[in-house]
Image (tube, rainbow, N blue to C red; front, side, top):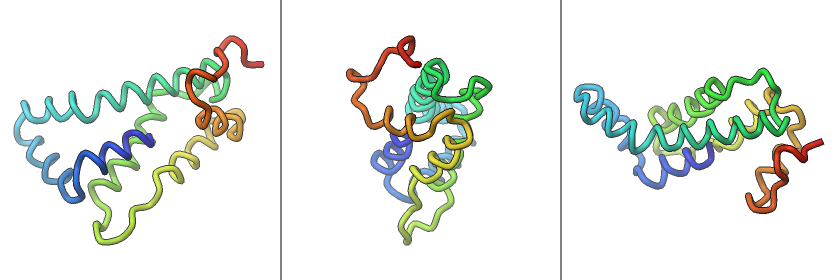
Length: 128
């Protein structure tokens, strides 16, 4: 979700997403392009990360990766679309932490994994 949050705020200046979404709602071809370029790549990456965390045992086995990604992305998009652009935006990390505390088996371990470079992480089968 951090990547989605950064993508929305680095690739799109404040005040651009809401009119873009409104325009895309009226033009199916624009909507499809928005989904292909902005939404689907982030969603696929986030879903894969959640699936891996479930497989490793870091998230509860009953976590639905698609639902969790929807919840996380909804808060990021809501802030990007509706928040006051004159004030500092809330941290996406706070929302992600709150949701993952409910889904994680061991939240502190999950945070540790997220801070470890990918090439240094243990293979899912080696989790004990």
